Image (cartoon, rainbow, N blue to C red; front, side):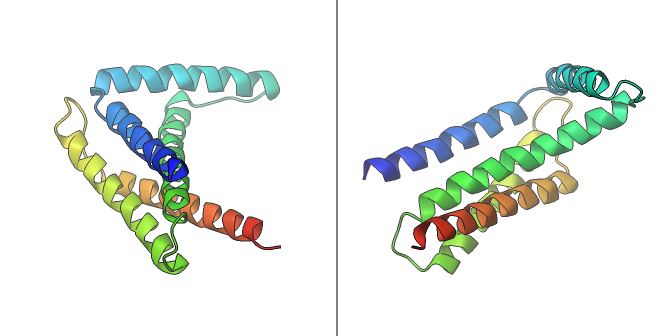
Length: 148
């Protein structure tokens, strides 16, 4: 029982973090991603010294990768929580994917009401793919771990 409560608490906390990040006005969100872009750009240029980076393109890639990764983590957390029941596994995997997609849709709708932000269908797709990757990846890992 404690494990189940803990795993669902992680899901709720992660969803709250996604909500918090989505609730940042455009200026604050842009400032955060710009700072991360500078750090990543500096690291890339130290590793590959003769590379010329387009900061706008790099920022776009980082922002979209963040969408994918945050929903991949959500997918891992949700399917991990659901697989702790005795229900049929395919149904639980479908439910986990559905939960991630519905949360992605609600997140983009939420952003419509945040100053300077907008809901993007492309972000729902990226988020959903991240959730799908997390759910399927964790399902495979758990399936392999449970076999003798």
